[in-house]
Structure formats: structure tokens, C-alpha cells
Image (cartoon, rainbow, N blue to C red; front, side):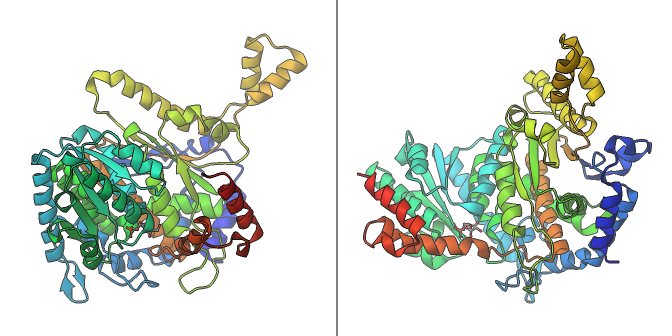
Length: 529
Ligand code: F6P
């Protein structure tokens, strides 16, 4: 029997048992937890037992996770449809050990790029700039925007703003109130062709010209395309290039992270890189059974492919990680949202899950109702720091911790009808009404969750967290036999937007479009000035 079938059979046998009962095994809490440095991952509140974990590990071994991992670090062209290596890990290889690609060590280039970023960041931080506006989208926005928000206590540079949406509301709202003479604009685009980014960059340039700034001195670019940045008119001294072996959604570690470096300073940025590097080392050397990215991936495979839970909620009990769910949406859904396998054949199983979430405790007052009592099971992934940064508000953090732990406990334990009857009776309900009221107060429980703990959200820890998720996505992709590093699924919409442009502009007849699109365009034409 193959590993997938063995796991499905196992699920059929254990699906109705109680997760709480698994804790009759005294060592469970420790046995179903693992540590990388000072980061602690608890997956004991799931229906995974020793046999299931063994079967999942066997699946990972059979899928050659270790071999594929080593191939990635060794510069193999594992992004096969784009014929590219995948070496974002070299960007955080801060100790500079050689990383070979086609017989050449890429580290010399990486270190020289890091050096020019540091010197530029220092200049910007001391030159009287008040604001930095990063214009980018997808990986050229989500990584730095998430990391800048996450590391707010470490900010000692200019304020950073992020413009991504082509909706004019985004740039208008972000530029309003800024002084064009003391603002630096960073145009972040790997390809330097992305329509949203280029449109926003042109608008920012016009704004700067009109408001007394000097785009020649106050525009920088982050891109793999020196030709295109030059054609846009950006001084080559302010262009920070990188290679095509850095995927957009994996690019925060290099030039795309420039706004983060300006916000927190080169030293703290180094600590961020060191955190990523520490997770790389762990991923490369830890046994599969103790390997955090592998364990996260296996829990994901169990819930998504075997238990058939279609979504995964990411719930950071850390306000400054409120953009983490958005960041992980791109990382996971753009990487593993594919329908065909490596050989081009259709995948026989569901691939990447829908990833969503929000910071706790806010989510508790919005969608946790469905998580606790809805008809769908949603595996929850909690993240929590042992301590916050606001030592004068320590009681807030204690409350946050209690809430986070309470949620995973409630999901597992639930509340029985018996318990609910006692509550309903305490409210004075009787007989049939007591029964009816009690049923509304039942929590099915037995809902799985995991918890990732870390001491404090500092630059090193953030580096560990991001690298952990990157490798988790990689391992899931290998197990699903998916090519995780391309994103062909974003192409068609872009092409159709280009061809629809003249129709929307009124230069082409809408009736050549499908009837629904034509009707929508006609409505828009009728209702605009
Ligand atoms: O959404 C598609 C995509 O190519 C992402 O993968 C990428 O992060 C984003 O667009 C932005 O691309 P660029 O950095 O080239 O502007």
C-alpha cells in the first residue's frame, strides 16, 4: 500500500476519537512538540499519534524531501519551468560560506550588494529624510511591509509607507501629508514591468516634481533589470540589483528589504538575516522527526490532504504580525496553488490549502464563532511571544497569552451537552426550552490547532519565523510533487487586463467581449463622468 493510502486508512480509523483522550499518554505534550533554537512548536493538540507521525515521516522520506532540500541549497535549477535555481537562502547566508551556482560562488556578489545597501541605508538615515515610500506589489511589497510592521519597536529611521494597489486611492492616501522634499521613493519590482508598480511609480514621480522634490536624487530602484530602471531614469548609483534565482515572494532578504533596513538600521537587519540563516541550518541538519519546517509541513499535509480540511487559519497573537496572514497567503498560495504535478500530469489530490487569518484577539470577535461552532473544521495555527515589548503594559501581554492558550484549549475540549444544560439551567431555563438553549451552547471541540512560541518578536526571531514558513511551503510542495517556485496562474488575468484596457477606456466596442463582461462595462460607462 502506498503512503497516501496508508495515511487515509489511518484517518478513517482514528477520525472519531478524542484529541483530549490522546493526552492519556503522559509524555504526549513533549513528544508532539519540537524546538529550533528558542522557538517551540507544539502540535500535540491534533489527532496525530505516533503511528500517524511515523507514516507522515515515511511519506516525506519517500518523497525525497532531504534530497530535494539539498538540491535547492546546492543551486540546482529546481524552478524547472523557468529554468532557474532557487537560492534566496544565499541572501541570508551572512557568514559568507560559498554557495555555488554553475561553478561560481554567488556570495561575493551577495556580500557586495549587502554592503551597498548598508551604506545607502546609513546615508538615508542620516540625510534628514522623514519618509520612505516603497512602491511594489506581491513579493515586492508584502515581505517588507509585513516585516516593517512586525519590527516597529526597532524603528529608528524615517517612517516607511507601502503603496501597492493600482487603485489611485492607495497612492493618494499614502502621499497625502508627506513632504516631497524629504521623501525617498523606492520602486521595488523584480521585473520592473509590473503594471501596478510602474503606474504608481510614474504618479509618484509626477507628485515629487510638482511638489518641489527631485526625483533624480530621491528615487531608488530594486530590480533584476538594470536596463529598465535606467530607461525609467533612475540613477544607477541608486539601483540595487539582484539575480533571477531570488523569487519575488522570497525576496525580503535582499534589496527588496531595503525599506526594512532603512527603518531598523543595518545592524538590526543583520540580526534578521541571522535568524533566517539559523532556520536554514536547522532545516539542513535536524532529523526529519525534529525538523520544524518538516513537522509544520506534515501537520499541514495531514489536515489538508488527508483530513480534507480545505483551509488553514493563521492566528498570530502578536498585533505587529497582523500582516503575516497576508504575507503567507502569497507565500503558500502562489507557491502551492497548482493543479499539475512536476511531470505535467494532473495532481490526484487537492494541493495547497486556502490560507487566511488575522491577529488575535481581534479575530476572536469576528470569525472565531465559525471556528468553534461552524460545520467546517478549520485547523488553527497560533503564534505567540513569551513576552511583549511594552514592559509597562505587561498585564496586556498576560491577557493576550491567556486568550491565545484559551482558544486552543477550547477548540480541543469543546463543551458537552451535559455541561451546556448546566449553564442553561443556571440562566433559569427549564424543560424543552432548557434543552433548546443548551444545544446552542454546545461546542463540538476536538478541533485541531498548533502553537508556535518564541521569546519575543525581535529581528532575529522574525527572520526565523519567515524562513520557517518558506521551508514549510517548500516541503509541502515536494511532498505534493508540485513546482513551488513558478506562478503561471497569475498570467492570464494580466493578459486579459491589457486587452480589456481599450474597451474600458471606451476606445473599443464592449460587445466583442463575453455578454457578462460587456454588460458590466456598459454599466460602468453609463455611471462615470
Ligand atoms: O503576482 C505575480 C508576481 O509576479 C509575484 O510573483 C511578484 O511577487 C509580483 O508579481 C511582483 O512582481 P515584480 O516584483 O516583478 O513587480
